[in-house]
Image 1 (spheres, rainbow, N blue to C red):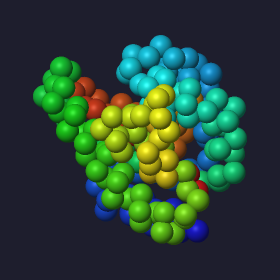
Image 2: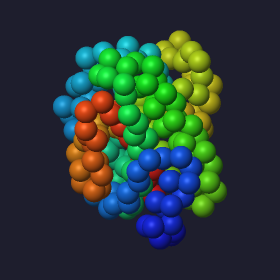
Image 3: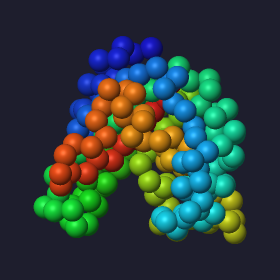
Image 4: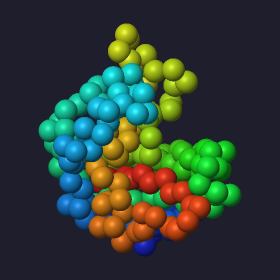
Length: 178
């Protein structure tokens, strides 16, 4: 296993703003988070293979997490012009997804069985085939932390990272389980 500082350094070199390594025991899938998904404010519930309910029940997600011992939590954090700076939010989200895409193959080369969970829904395909046809790229599909029932602010706090970096900032958080 790569040492904790080496994992953090690799994440920062990939373009993340912050990274921390923690014991995977901090991950606590919660029914309340899955209920937030079911409210469907993002319009992906039942419409994306990597989102609930297609990604599995909370118990199935909990079972997928169980074998892992270490979690690398990664964040892209950026400054916004104001709290309505949607363009800035999209830019920070793009930074998160690009850094995640850079880091994932590096980590998979060393840890082929890792479980990646990112911010937001899977974006491998422009349009998901769910529920009408099978996932086109199940080996590339990535669920979100929330899809697995993880309360992101709690994961951040428990790993030693901030969730809120102050006024007019945005943080996108993902993780890799080893």
